[in-house]
Length: 107
Length: 143
Image (tube, rainbow over all chains, first blue to last red; front, side):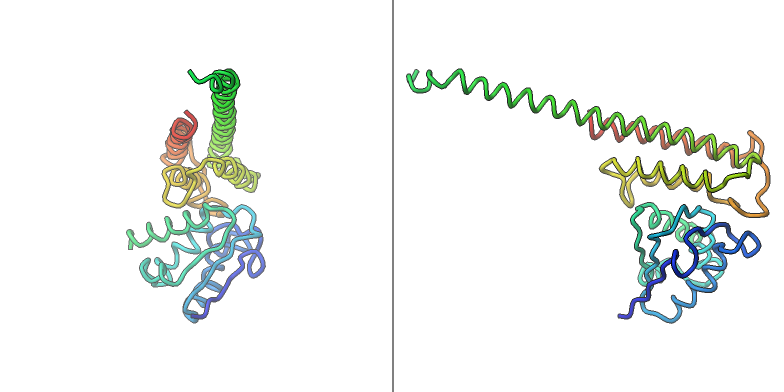
C-alpha cells in the first residue's frame, strides 16, 4: 500500500492559522484544497505529520479536516481507513477526529 | 524460638521497617509531584481561559500567545498517565481548546463577543469541566 506523507511544517507552514483564504497566507481551506484532498484522492494511504508545527488552532484543524466531509465529499468511515497522523503532541489526532466526526454528524 | 533466628530478628525488623518507611516516602513524593502537576495544569487552564475570553471579547493583538498557552497546558496534562486518545482528560482538553481556538479564531470575520455571549460562556463551562477532570485524575492516580 503506498503511503503519502504530508509534513504540515515543511510542505505548508510551521505556523498555519485561520480558516479561509482571506484569513491569511496559510489557512485550513488552502491546506485542505491544495494538499490534503489531492493526496487523499491519489494515494491509498495518507499520513499527515504535524511535527515541527507550532500551535495549530482548532479553527485551522476544523476547516482543514472537518472540511473534508463538508466540502470534500469524504465520509468519516472512508477517512478512518486512509488517513493517519504523526505528531509528538497527542491532542492533534484527537482534535482532528473530533472535527471529522462532528462534520459527519452534521452532514 | 530458634537461637539463630533470634540473633537475626532485630536486623530483620529493622530492614522490614526500612522497606515500609521507604515505600511510604516514595508514595508521599509521588503524591507531591502529582499535586504539583495538577496545580500547574489548573493554573495554566485559568490563564488560558482569561486570555481566550479576552480574545473573544475583542483583544485580537496576540492570538499566537493564546495558542502557545494551550500548548503549554497540554505539556502539563501529558504528565498524567491517562492523557490519551479517548480518555476523559484528553476529551476535556480538546473541548476547552475548541471553545477558545475553534469557531472563527484567527479569522477576519471573527465577531467581538460580550461576556454573556454563548461563545464566552462555552469557554467558562469547558474550563470548569477541565479543572474538575484534572482534580479527578489527581485523586485517581495519587491518592
